[in-house]
Image 1 (cartoon, rainbow, N blue to C red):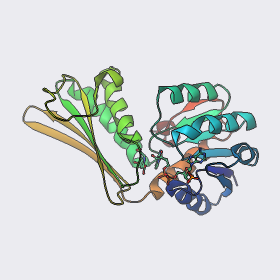
Image 2: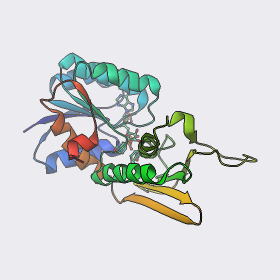
Image 3: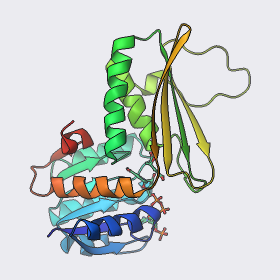
Image 4: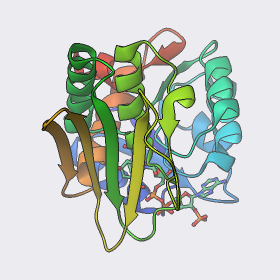
Length: 242
Ligand SMILES: NC(=O)C1=CN([C@@H]2O[C@H](COP(=O)(O)OP(=O)(O)OC[C@H]3O[C@@H](n4cnc5c(N)ncnc54)[C@H](OP(=O)(O)O)[C@@H]3O)[C@@H](O)[C@H]2O)C=CC1
Ligand SMILES: O=C(O)C1=N[C@H](C(=O)O)C[C@H](O)C1
């Protein structure tokens, strides 16, 4: 039985995770929220799972490295400096960072990569996401993950090929751009569509999360997979063998 420490335990994902840990027959070694002692939690855990906010990342990575245990980072809204901190922590402990822990989205990213690679840059790519009214970051981590999959297939840098906001007289679409649109409302757990628009035809690849338990189950699977691994940065496709 593994001891899984929950960072962000009172949040929507923290609560879903506690339930998934119990359902999988493992133990939640405890939980912290803002102001809690994550170093103590790490000492009592075999692995940490972080569903909080970017501002918490540094302390969470530090706690994992201090205790010599793996950490799964599910928090989204990360910037370059956060990824640099993850790379640095991954020299010391196993780290899995992903914008989406679900099986379905991990497979969707694989399909997007295939489609974007086969169709070529004359097909325009637009990524549309919808989430509940409480979500604070946009585009979603999943939308960015899907954008990265498309950019990788095209062998381009996503940051240099993104169109993330359109308003007013925008001019025509940039050639080879990957566009993002974010909708917010209600209690939507997470909907993502990747539209590949060509001349007189269109392909749409979609995933709908009906409940956040899918993220929680994926996070438990990822966290268990990390225990006993060598230090390094790991991905959900590796966990799921895709
Ligand atoms: N990768 C994935 O598959 C998924 C990722 N997410 C991401 O997970 C994150 C959390 O989502 P969600 O649970 O809906 O958000 P909530 O706002 O419901 O929960 C966030 C939790 O984090 C805690 N928290 C905030 N700051 C800190 C801190 N500095 N140290 C410790 N705890 C802190 C909050 O505690 P307090 O109330 O005390 O501030 C709260 O309990 C988001 O970034 C979201 O996008 C969500 C679903 C799936
Ligand atoms: O905040 C959420 O709720 C979610 N966040 C993740 C994201 O930003 O993609 C994953 C999921 O879509 C739910």
